[in-house]
Image 1: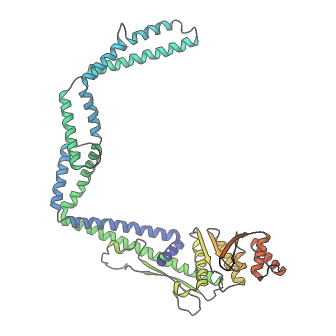
Image 2: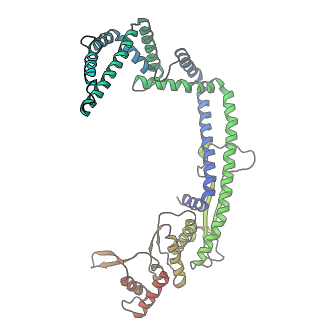
Image 3: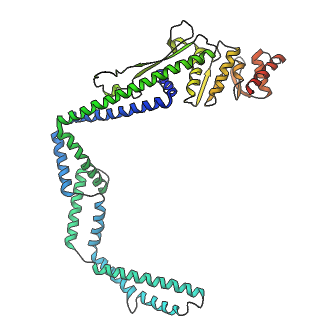
Length: 438
């Protein structure tokens, strides 16, 4: 909207100061919205709080009784698998130990024999030495593995009581997760149930506090609203200060653009009272960009009434006004691309050169596209495109051609005189192009 566009221009001109003030206001407003939602939710829930309190008490009682831990199911499953497979593990380990640690036929005995045989000749050749080292490492690795497995086997024992305890614990955790949690898997459901239990403590405090809790939060809400009002006041003050500076600078630019009687004013009007004991305002009635009405006013005449830009500026005046605005604002906050049409309406000579200079200045921080019939404006462009129309009586076609070098000089001359081969116009064109280069 036009109002939004004008606010953005002023805020860009204000730079870091307005940006900081706006950020402070938005942070305060976010806190105000948050606590208002909390109070509204609490008030709505008071009607059926007994039902919810009962559910929360049940959840917290089960949580206190069970004391579930995050990832507990995973560790229980691992221990259960071990206890349920004690006999299978014992048979497998006995087979392994027989294979690697038997005095008569164990792998370790054979490796030990090979190790001793190689030990006597390992210095005879590097290949033998390397093989001896590998076999020695294998001997110690197998010996260590056998020792670890033997110790594990000696301590391995069936524990029906522990297994039953774990199975009961797992069943209780599963019941808790399914009853109070959500999720596609059991572990995800248990995790969400634990999270619910943590949140339930704060929720219980809200509910059991009843009306007194609403009163407590309302006091806090009032304090936060005061912060919103204070931040809105600071934002308005910053905007008014920069609006005054913007008005003066844009008016100065306009008078350099062949509008000697023009005046521009950026007007900031507060829509939120910021003094005295204020009634709370619902957050949805507070604008997240501040509570100021920003309107840009203009007159092209010395005694003219300042009116909204859309009512006071003609096409050419509007283009020059936007140029003046963007030149001033770009000094603190440049933007990407601008398109100007009819910016040369009603001007020529020196004024046209001034328009061109400002377009050139603006192009240092943005891409500028200008539609112009004035050579005094066209000479400032980094690229010059000529647009021609051609018609055969039934179809009209337009062509766009890039002109440069001598061809551009001729095009500037044609724009100056309307003649294709005027030597005087050619001289003038060179003079204008040299002016830009200089």
